[in-house]
Length: 214
Image 1 (spheres, rainbow, N blue to C red):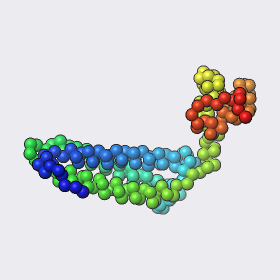
Image 2: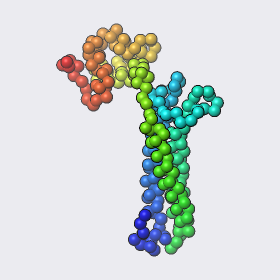
Image 3: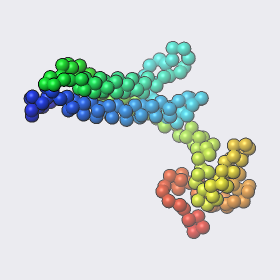
Image 4: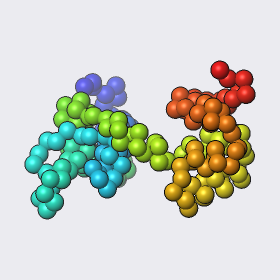
């Protein structure tokens, strides 16, 4: 907390509070993105992505026995909505002040202080009841990676876009994996393909020289 340098200006212009509210809104947007990503990655366990397991903090769904809802992530989503709407109220209240006095300062104070409080409490709960207890389902990640067509993108520098597009369609239409299709067509050797499809290779910038690799 600090006293305004110009006490006359602060009765007229609320832009400093609009700025603080905007920073809170930006933080809330990012926080919402993180919570939504966690909800998506933990969706399942059978009908979703299910790469992550979130801590179970309550009994579960009221209509689906055994289902555990991502309630802490949903709490953060709601905190974000509240802060974003509060920012709009602060903006409009600051805009509507007239001449020497902004009569809507109480609304600005109420919305801004409330936003700061729920942001602090929300982050504390998010960290303690969700983030710290997240587990990665390694076997599920392996399964999704094995069945994914994302690897075809790594083949583009060696086979060309059009050929890789054909390969992707062939994999979709058949019961074969990408590796099986590439090898059956004799496009790359098993050693070359294994080198390209290494996780470290696919996630590292640059193109691998497969002809001279060990």
